[in-house]
Amino acid sequence: MEYDYLKALDEFFCSHYTDYSKLGAIEGYRMPELISLGPNGVIERRSSDCMKLCYQPDCDELLRRFKEKLVDTNFTFGFSLPSFSDRIGDRFRKHTFSKLLPAVLVRSKETAESAGAKLTLDGKIWKGIVKGTLYPQKSVLLALALVCRMNAEDVSDLFAVTGYNFSSENVRDVVAEYLLSQKIFNAQMRDRCLAEYRIDSLPIRKGEN
Image 1 (spheres, rainbow, N blue to C red):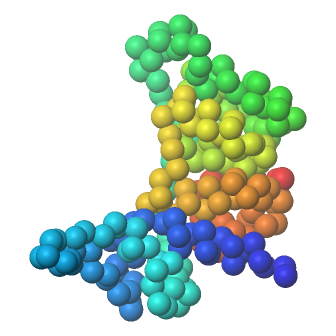
Image 2 (image 1 turned 180 degrees about the vertical axis):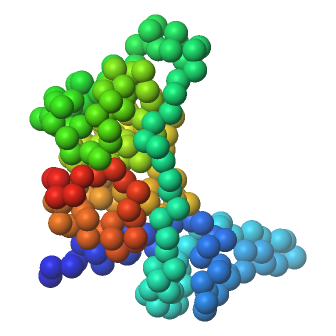
């Protein structure tokens, strides 16, 4: 069916999202017992994984309520300035974002120019990121991975050199991880998934595949 990918996204989200303070605030959420008294009076502690939405009896309804109050709180300028020591160190590091990027773009059948055209970043900022005089923030890396249809290995490599990772406590990250892991790069499907979780902070130019 047309929206099977949205159902799959919901299932992925419910089994991966771990901001338990926000989940616990959902009306109707039932807090599971994390500590119990086992045989022989031994205290047993359950993994916090049992607090995920997928283990809730009314998972679908709780997710609906959760979505109703979602607001994308990720704010970014798209870049950060490297320190003087970072700039010096980058000259000698074998792997940096700007050094890895050209090969990654080639594998994605993109150039720095074509990739930058798919982002809403100011041209000067994008050129600075490409040259390594500016560091990309996570929102830029996620957007770039989506519009360039990057494979999992390249995304992992770029995350490694920038110090980022997917945070299971961040709605944007969980949705982006789903899109990349399932290779959902079609613009309409991608944007529908982002809109479903009210994510509007990724610098993706409208209509771009």
